[in-house]
Amino acid sequence: MASIGLNVSSYYSLGVRLYFDYSRDITRYWQWGISYETTRHATTSVSGLPRDAQPLELNHTIICGNIYRKVNTPIKGVHWRFGAGAGLIHAFWDESDQFGLALNLSAGLHIKLSRNVWLTTSVFPLLLPSNRIPYAFIRMPGQSHILSGSFFNIGFQARF
Image (tube, rainbow, N blue to C red; front, side, top):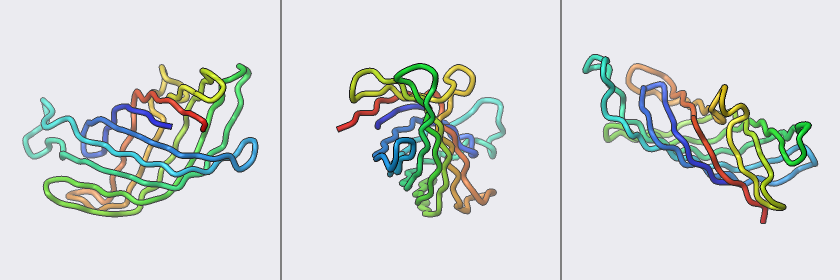
């Protein structure tokens, strides 16, 4: 699966997010997977914030092992997929590199377009336009973690 969207972090850094996921069925309703996501900041300042509270230009890359649960809907060819995972993060800001542990929760809506292709987005695109929330244990200036959320994601999943 590949998707693109926006990302906002606990450091007020807004950026573009690119996400890839390889998953395989364990049983009819359970899957395991490996995911890779990278976020690049797109903002350098936010109006209304004091100069010392401007967003940190945070870029990060996360690789995780995940477990997913598929839940069918009453509509044929549509299912939800909920998951959790753990892995590593690489964060880069102001010429500083840090590595740490990352945890994530995900929830997605999968709509079958053809025999082997699905459209993926957030579970409730209009109410909650997020499908993945990573949490990373990295000590950064003024905080002991990174919390970020993805928004307005859309992607495609293909079965080979």
